[in-house]
Image (cartoon, rainbow, N blue to C red; front, side):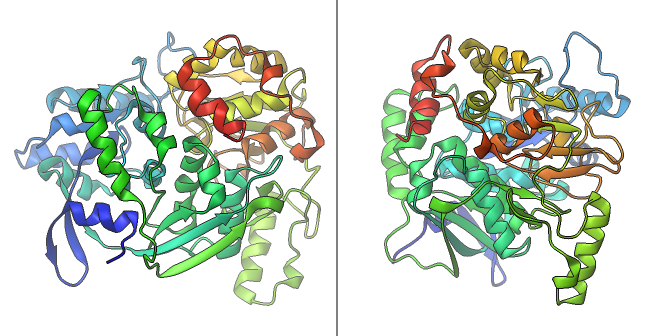
Length: 493
């Protein structure tokens, strides 16, 4: 029988079944962070339980960490206490912790793949909705709640309902200034925030195969904003090259054996999906959100909707409320709207490939004096790699703040937030009311659109700027890993 990559991994991990569609799955990797874990750890203590497999459990500080100088104390009391609690819990329960000062600290969905904690064919859970990001490497990854987290800590298993399956086929190739971020925004725009509810989404097609692993992570990350339960891409040689030599990846004979297994995880021809959606990305223009959920999205050259043209009364009220909150006029062009800030970061777009693209647009140019612009790398390893390449100099000479890693403005932690009524172009994944601070107005976009907007001081079309070539960046030092996994895919390899 033909099976999808999801079905193959699922079948390999089922331990028991109850009822019609609930299954007990073995968990290969449990990732946790400081925000969603404290109550789960307290539950273990209350019941006198230990973590069953501390060797398969990894804790990271990411949501609450300040992105400023780490020689300074953490000023926010709530952030400081949550970080301290995770440190205590990790020590008590013998869990590996990448803390505030670890050279491997970073956002959990960036660190997992780059360290080889994320591998094809494994199951991953984390108390974070964007755990689907790890599916870009062919892993079956689910975000879980606090009570489920306690269950995983104690048993190394999780009860899950088997999701229906949906394929999103991206045909053609990305041209010019369109990116996977624009593609997933367009998909959510077309299908709505509930268009993938109850489904595991497999991204397929020529466009998916043509981009690098990090760009696939952006697709899987934001599938959650379309209501997906998780997302996945079948593993291929690009995934193997990305993982080879990573600290936690297999090596030697184990590596060769692992690859033989990973090669069996392709979705079979004739495998069936419950739903299918196709998009040719060849003529896709850069996208940007105008409202208060990711589906409220338009092309950067388009105008925001006019409620009078919306027939459904409920939808009309939603549009009216969103326009009022965002301070936009019905029918106005989105391009040219003045902004206060630009944030390039988050688990959606803070990887090295994102930073290289931004450098290609901003090199030799200056951020508008009216804009506060910051770049927050997704991990300290991304930061070090970028600095060895000399990207940080390009950013700082252009007028960007070059920060340490963390979730930052995506969730308005510490000082990284928008003020009431301030408008920002962010590369993160959510634009709900108050998301980046009370009264904040968030426009989601790709790193290229965000960078162009920072330069102009208003929402801008990145197609107005020439991109310098990779050679013209005059990178200071490029490792074989960076050349193979970052630059080669960007060249279309």
